[in-house]
Image (tube, rainbow, N blue to C red; front, side, top):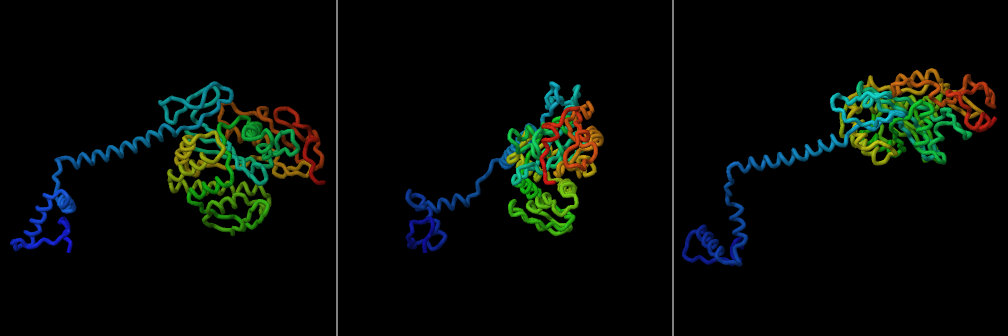
Length: 410
């Protein structure tokens, strides 16, 4: 049997009768030898009770506490520094959106054109990459004083005053010399002001965000069955209340074939789905999930918002209630047709009233002449456009002329 702490050999009895004495003697002998006894020394050191100086445990605790406080404080400081509202446009004024005024909460600074720090407007765009158009267009205004948000959907077939034949708002982004700046200009023609910010997302981002939020419970209004091999799209979701992951939520969001009014009915379902997500997140009150979703948007979307801006929106979202979230569709003639091509013709008076009540961030009310809205005066039953039935709110001409409209099948 090997005795640890010895030299690996049995030690003969040298006259000491006690085993403990033998062990003690052997240990003392090994300590004197520089090449032996290492393990024994190790055991003795480990078993030896080392007296601590008075207060050393308290000092250790204090050190750990200070380190944690430093980390938490640093994270909080970083949050405070990076989390800030987006800059806003005074639509011709000289002021920039950020303010150093610390006297009021929230920070609201009065300027000749708008209250900086109260209203924030944003254009949200969803891309349909297969068909090369913008499938979803929404404009939102957030009120940082009342903690309210108003969202208005602009249908993708909305008639706009552009020179090319297919005069639909969803054609602007993907055209040559198009992109987000061109679309922002097109939206300004309808709104009478340019939104402060924009976010352009694709289908992958939508899926990731929904999955990050934990999916959503939603009452699917109809049996959804649709297959489109060209788009690699297969939708088979039964009617009824159910949990949807990101993939299926996107399918519900995109589905339109089984509705009586196609895009218009789809917009209503989209609004309800967005509200279901909002209600679920407000109940959970989970800022971490919202920040994770904000990071996905920041890393993958086309936007002029910083991650700090998106953090701010996430923080502000949790201050709202469902009663303060409004999502509607632009008032219009949804059954408009020009040369057998479907359009949505804006009802100008109703629309301008909605803009000023729900979307306008400026002090000055928007007037029809501030917009460049092309619309039908009455539904047009003829194939070729009748000149007296078309008007532009700013008094201008139809871009490209009436004959520039795309000619569909008779």
